Image (cartoon, rainbow over all chains, first blue to last red; front, top):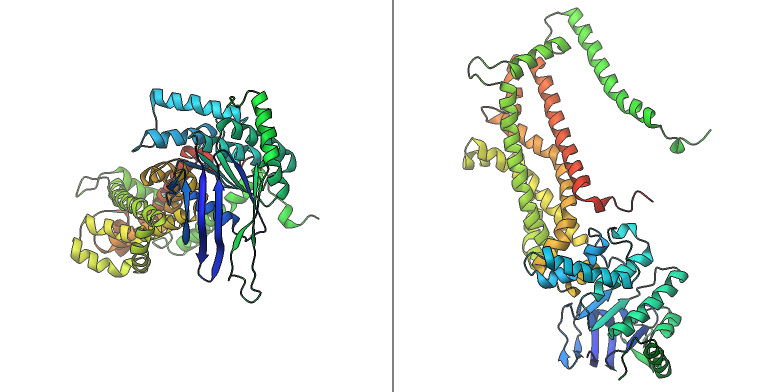
Length: 257
Length: 274
């Protein structure tokens, strides 16, 4: 369960309204693409969901509970860059989540528990196609592989919500297509709610079951910061969702019911 | 004819060009020394190599008549002890305060104006205060090194910590890390090599402060000896001592560089291929 409710959300900075009167009801398991021109507040909205910033007014609820106003393990994140730790190997990057969770003081696991975490991490890395690169450092990986690693790292704690901030913005088209496939497969397996910021409309429509378009409804030409952006289009792609669920069901990925 | 920026020396060429200034300096000294000695065999300003070797044999390999110590080794030990202690304390301060200032907004707000001001106090100007407060023995010299080096290390480390991509800290939090875990597993491992680099840069100032303090008040130490024999214009002792200090500083720089390369293989990862 991980439905997100946004009520009358405003986000203002000094001399600038970024978001105004945003209302949203996202049921569990939805794949939302946030699209819109640059500077329209879609990344700000993602940061609010992440808990990195607090809304000026209004509320965000996760399963009915007010969102904790700092990042936490219930919300995984993948940024466009710098998502992985350069000083840890691929495998160490992924077991880090388990180490933080199980070793509060040292942040490090030893012996049997470490082996168990490594086994689990190997499984996740195998699933994202990094099974042969466990001992490498991120700097030795290509851009696409680094993003795979970032996704694997976020998935090991099984977050309810996965937040993606232009995760494929820096990748070439061929790599992008592979990443789409990977992401859709993981999404249907893990049944999480996904929010993805993208400036690529096509990408949004390819991946999402729901496209949220952010834009300014009112513009004051003498004071560009006077009004904020709203969600101007909220397009549920129901047919596609049904088709994808059916396909996934046929492939045995989603249990019936 | 290719542009000069595109012409590179080979392996042997690099060795030759690297050695050349050393050879020129040595040859220049040899010639100048020989000329002066030809003029006046008792000249003390530019002693010949043989005199320096004899002086080193005297201070390093024969026990001192008065104390029974091997002077050069006793001096080296005393100086390195002070230097190590001072740099150790400064490093520890830098780790705690620097990372604290870089990572925790309240610590930054509370300490950064104070540290910025403190780092502008000329350490040599407070040396008399240190002698008055901490006495003339070891403590005041160690404190001078700490005061001279720590503010630079603290500020450098704080800046490096602030420069860390915000994404990494957010990511660590979404993996459930508490502040202590973030320090231990994310910030500290990435800051240690930066600290080692900063330490390399502060070796020069640290020796400067050490020798200044020893010159003014000490009973042993490399700086003390140089300033003591200056009275007799004993260049045959001073020059080897200077060379020895340079060698020690160079070796510690090399050691820190080796430490970085050895302990942080990720620093070089991915760089070899590009």
